[in-house]
Amino acid sequence: MRIVKLIMTLAAAAMLLTGCDFFRSLVGKPTSKDLERMRQEAMEQERQQREQDSLNRVRALELEQARIAAENSLENAGKYHVILGSFKVEGNAEKMYATLEKNGYKPRVIEFNNGFEAVSVAAYDDYREAIKAMQDIMEYQFCPEDVWIYDVNQNMHVK
Image 1 (cartoon, rainbow, N blue to C red):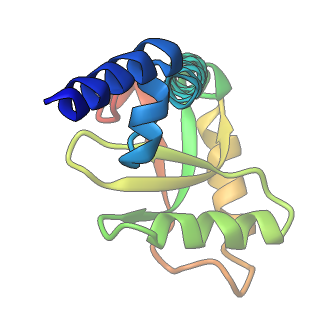
Image 2: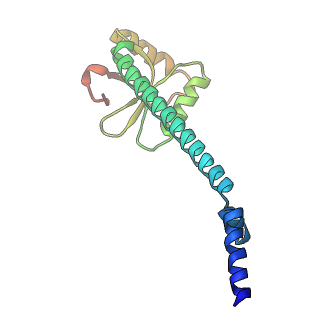
C-alpha cells in the first residue's frame, strides 16, 4: 500500500511541477506553445482573407464603374456605330475585337438586350460619315460582308 501511495504522490508532484504540456507532449497532443502558434497563424490567415476580400470588393467596384463609364461613353462616342459583327456565341466578339485591334482600330463591344454582342469599329455623330466609314472598311479583306450601322437612339443595347 505504501508503494501505491508513493507512486500516487510522485505522479501528483510530477503534474504539479511539470504542468499539462509535459503530459500533452507525451501523448502527442499539441502543447500550449503549439496552440498559441496555431492561434496566431489562424489570426494571420483571417487578416489576409479580410485584406483579400477588401481588395476584391474594390476591384469589383472599379470594374462596375468602368462598365458604367463604357456604357455612358457609348452614347457620348457618337450616335452612329459601324458594326462589323453581332455574335451570340461567346468568344466570337472577342475574336473580331482582336482582329480589329491588330489592324489598328479601337473597337468597342456593345451588349444588346437579346444577348448578342456587337463589335463597333467606329462611332460618328453624322450618318453620312458613318456610311462613308462603313464603305471604307468594307474594302479590307478582314471585313465581313454584313456590315451595318447602329443608331444608339434605338436603345436596344444594355444600359
